Image (tube, rainbow, N blue to C red):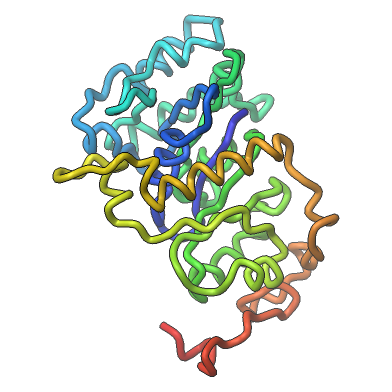
Length: 282
């Protein structure tokens, strides 16, 4: 299974969620994190890893080696053993490496897909921000599941509503993961027409254990973030193929008919909470 994780406004914890999902993936699965964020990688700096082996060395090897399972030879272990393919910190190098891995003729990601030949293998691609033209969009299009991370706040959800047409994300059958508090999942699903698969809590201590920050570290699996990531992994395993969202919820209007002068598809708007008007919330 190839799982792509991204956002459409900033990058509100995409890398942290990717690591949490991999670290808390149920046995006997074999997850691997691949940094595919075109703005550059962060895991090497966070955990004091070398930049090689990693995405650049994988790219060089893929030019010569027809073995699509070679991804595993270019991983490094995080504390605890989770394998990762780190990207260089510079965006230019990362974009060049990603462009090489993408098969322009078929718009496929053969190296990422080939790594799943190992029994129980799960490739988690950290795609960062999914802008139009980003290599991450191609990876998201070819993934088995696409998770869009957003905070349930008016500004981020409005950006997400617009992006469903501008980046053609709706055709990729995305699922939402909400980070922190705000509008309830049911209201977000009803307004956007996209299933909310999980809610990730604001958990500073759990995030610290998953981002290489100094200080006392808890077992990530025991944190609120870890438990939520474990539940998300189980939900992904239960729906190995994207569901037909038309059977779950009412679809919004086709992208071309969205009312872009309004923050929600079909003129919908999340109801004010606690008597406050939506525009008054900042």
